[in-house]
Length: 64
Image (cartoon, rainbow, N blue to C red; front, side, top):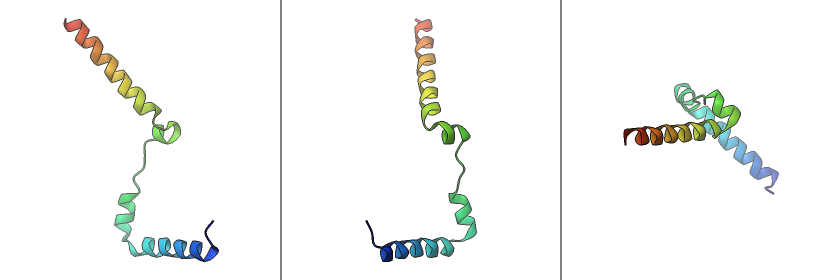
């Protein structure tokens, strides 16, 4: 485990770099993620990809 001096140094560096960035840039970086991703992770995204794949396959079968 890191010593307390290393931890204090790391925290100080993070705070100084945060204070050094302009407000507009800090706001831009903190983009809000969708609630579905925040609550359920990648599950909704993977299910949507799966659904698109199934729909595409059924459309191809109907065209034949």
